[in-house]
Length: 440
Image (cartoon, rainbow, N blue to C red):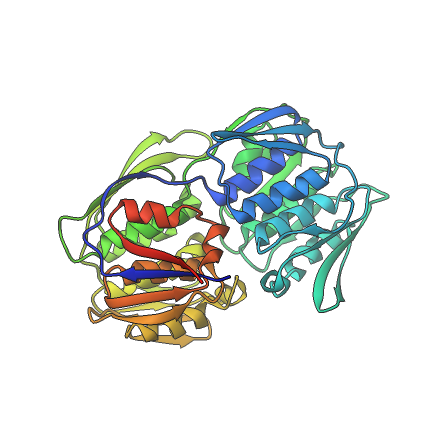
């Protein structure tokens, strides 16, 4: 059974929608609630495939998690309460699950073994395993029957403090080390080339942990137990980016969309800053701007934008948004150059190659480079038969492009959208998108 999305030229997007919960924060809320003493409630959690993988693994480790319509409850077991799993821990397609759980499990006193689907098998783990091994973790990769397994041996001695200078800016690397640092006597520090998203640090601080951030350096100085609490997950800016760009690029000036309850953490607003520099008309009204995760409503109207040049200094704050930024760039005047984005080659698919391959089908002028793309603005987009390459962000970006293309854009293999944005189809249709789902 395969899922196909058929998209046709659509009227101007109009309306107000609430964006589903942030995927990155949902993962972290589950983990920190599991390690709390007592029960936590998580509201507006994203019920996506990736988040459900993290929940399933925590259940295998002895944590009771109940899913209700409006919230989930997590009965925390405390820092020392996780139980040995019975069987392998399957992460599906979720790199966040694999990497964060590897960090957490590397400090436990029992053995564990993690694996995932074929796509996840190809994503690099040395960047996680190297610093964890330096802390004393006993961890290695094994191949069996064509599958990769991350094998972690139970710790006989506590992990040791580390000052780690990461060669890449990666919130997953940083978070894995900080989670292991919960079990260290002494300071755990991660220094990155450029700051990556800081949801783990903010959540640690909100729980009363001594986690300090100075520029691109994060340090967990000490750990004290914390009680269960309420977690309220803001909307995911990476998901908001799709209706946002769909509105920005629409040729009819009557389009106007309000995106409600969006998380606007500064480490996530790279796309916002780039679009504003390109000439986008965007407004933000804050609900909360103090400690913790800032939240705002975003108002979007169509805008005439100019091409821009981006380098490696821009990439960490918009790494997940580059596929939809490519759609925006294709509608802008002039050329947009993206460089320093080679990390996209080790995502769910090789996103640089996939974007170049699929956008050419739509008659969008695009050139692939080893570390980026050149996109020339054009108004002559055409319908085509496209593939998601099994990547949720490629699928949704093609759908947004299809809303202003002449003819029909047919996107194969869109079940992957469930990874991050389960209600993408219904939300976009509520704003006026002409889309049809088919099961074949």
